[in-house]
Length: 291
Image 1: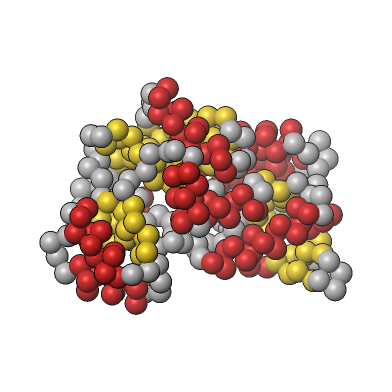
Image 2: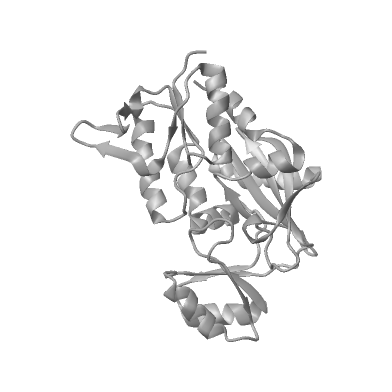
């Protein structure tokens, strides 16, 4: 198959390089683009990266839209939306990806879909946020844009809550996203979907000295076999987003399962290390069927 399909991602990143390798093997074309190099020239209504005009591609596969989550990422996705409007297939759709990147819109989408989430309060009022922490007993403050728990704070209702909230706001967080800390069994799960189809799952196991499971804080990947009920819940969570590839983060609690987020970019390495399932190969198959 002779198709010019580029990968938008991070050069040297495990998942980005894996996707580029597979596409080269299947199409003979290898191209990795980094979102920082995008140029939108409205004099001609075209989007380019260096000397490559993106509307000359047969498709674009977005693995990462930047190294850090921030409002700037939404601006970059907006630029990629121009490419989609020109008729070039983009996997996943930039507009749909943006809904998952923003924690607020992601959470509201889950809530409106009837998906169980931890008790959460979102406000710009520091007094309201402090009262929520006191009610929850222990809470996690989460930036609206973040990944791998960066910038998150664990706050105890019996501690210096006001000072913690002021520090959180001083770090640039104008909105307080306050979520009750759930009683978890030391791990959470990532369930991966390609084109809305479940392909596998992995667990993140918390390190002994960490309050969260992220690998950035010492967590490790482990195999898991989610029940049909959990798979059904994860499917329900990802369905409103309509993403070509997604990972649903959820956990079991004494009161039942809860969903934390739907990720537009995660799941590849965890699934491979934990279960030997290659999400990259499944995604390339999905993309090639769609171009």
